[in-house]
Each structure stands twice: as C-alpha cells, then as structure tokens.
Length: 459
Image (cartoon, rainbow, N blue to C red; front, side, top):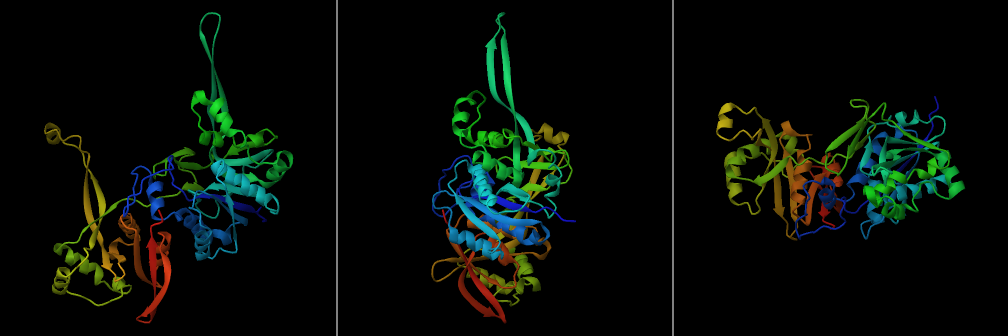
C-alpha cells in the first residue's frame, strides 16, 4: 500500500521559555523558577528540544513517510547560533536531511509555520505537512495515522484538539431595563500541533499570498477582544486558521479517537483532552525530574561509595580501574581537596493519619519524605582551574535518570566543567544532551579511546 508522504515542520525558540522574557542571572548559579521547568532547564542547555526532535528522527525516520524536514528557528538576540545548531543536527547524522531557515519571531510559532509552509509550497510534492511546536514530540512511527484519517471532504487542517472560546461580549439593555448578553464564540485549534493539506497551502498562497491569518492579530486582540482579556499570543492561536476557513476549508481534530495531553507552563503537569486512555500520538516534552539531591560525602558513606566504585561495571568506565578497600578509602578521604557528593533520591511515603496524630495536631501531615543513596558525584580541580566532574550510579539504580538529574543539579551552580568519557560509554549521548561538547583532546586508556568534553554556561 502506498502511503501519502508528509513534510516535518518544526519551529524552534532558543530564548527563555516563560511568559516573561527577562530573568536575573547571578554569577555561578542559574536562577531557577520552581514552577517552570523550561525556564531553568534552558539555562543548562538551550538546545535540549533540538536534541529531542533530532533523536526522534534518527530513531524513526526510516519507518516514517517523511519527504522533507524543515526546522524554522525564531531569532532572539544572540540565542540562535547557526554553527551550534548545525553541530547538534550533525551529531545525529541528519545534516543532509534537514533544511534550516530563520524567522524574525513575528507571530511566534504561527509566523514560523507560515514561513516554513511558504518555503515548502515552492518545491514539495508531499500531500501533507506536519506543524509542531518544539516542546511537543511524536511518540512513534504511526503518530500521523489518526490525523490522516480526518482528511475528508473540505478539511484543510487537522489539529490535536479543537474547541470553542468566547471572543467578544456585547451588553445591551432592553426596554424593560434588563441586560441582554450576547457572546461571540470562536472555534479554534486549542492544541494546534497537527497536519495541513499542502494542496490547501498552495491554494491559499495563490489566493491570498499567505497560509495563516497573522497580519491583523495585534490590532484585533488589543481593540476588539479586550473585554474578554484575549492577549496577542492567545489571539494568534485562536485566529491563525481564519484564512483557511474564509476560503472554504474547515478544521477538525483527533480528539474523538485519541488522548491529547497538554502542558500549560513547561512544568510536567499535564492535563488531558479528548479520549482518555486512548492512543496518544504526540506528547509534551518531559523535563528531567527533580528527585535527587547532592549532599556532602562523609566518612560514614565510604562503604557505600566502595560498593558502587568497586563493581566491575563501574570500574570498566573509570580512568583508574583499581579496587580499593575501606582503609584505603579512609586515607584517601582525609586528603580530599574538593568535597564529593552522595546522590540521594527522594522517596515519598504516604500514610493514613491516625487518631493519635490528630489529637497531637499532626493530622495535616499526609506523607513523609525519605532520601536513599543511589550513587556518588566526583569532583577534581584541574591545573587550569576548571572543575572535572563525573558520577557513578549503583548498578541497582541505573537507567532511571538519576545520573542526568545529578548532573543538572550540579551544573546549575557552575559556569564551566569538563569530564572524560570512553568512546564506548553510552553516557556520552547524555553528556551531549546536557550541552557538553568535545574539546578535541583525546587519549587512549587500556586500549580504548577517551574523549574530553566541556560544558560552558552560555547565559
């Protein structure tokens, strides 16, 4: 069976991810907003969403009917660096498959999509184009199928979720002195990631010169919809498909057959629309959890440290693969110049409040937090003043994200760091995801190639 091809169009933004475009940076420490993961994680590595989409494409591209891939980068100050963007794409072997264009950030995501669609309309022979925000990701190689199924009759755009919203309220008084309320309702793509017909795109460009309605958004949102507090950003989402509907096309969604998760503020706090429990073709980007802490290594922790360090699977990836005993560890601990850390993970214990706790005014406590050690974090100051870091996780706790969380927790308090990693260590990909880059220095240890990688704060 021949499957219609589609183009993969993503807009990227490498500036702060919050409603406010300004935040304070204190030297040596990232300023973190507890309720906005996207804002503080961006300060660790601003290309994390570019990594995520490239990783998805590398894994699934051969199984997807994708024709062209276009990344539209919305420009903000110095935060878009073509060389660094290309470096990420090349890491995944996609440099010959992705076209990058730059946009002035007017009309945000919808302006970027509009620019990308106009570019594709000139040469693409695909049937559809997938429009997606950078902080949403397809889940597998069949994510497009529910969207394809909705293209019947005059449908031009299939979003994840379409709903109605009040756009204008008129109050008038009748002859009896009673108020009459009239509300205008607008059907719009509330979760707008989705597919647009390329035939529709070309037709709209031919008729109007544009794909989406963007030119009068600012004026309309300020003047005609002020009484329902629709700001410019919201108005872009509500009215961007007007050009389609004004020219005979309709919009629909996949909510009758699919689950539609939505993350309102980059905080891993999803709400769902559509058919709960059904197939979920696209999900919001999942930010690293904040379930670990780094506490200063004490002598009482050395037995656990050795349990991790002396394991064969740990020593295989260490520069020095010697086995040490407890007495040796105690002598080493006395000479430690930079404190190491124990990596603890948060463990929440829920319990039912009993009568005694209520009587002692303790009934409001509904859970207890315990911390369990899962690994340790290494630190060494090099001669050039740069701190070399690394961490080792207990074999029973690997592949659970604790190492990445530990690195993030440490990097939030640093300006620069280096590490050494063997070529065959799968953690090399994680380091790249976090913003580490090869310095160009390599060495051979026990017959294996070892890379030096460096991380630098960019803001």
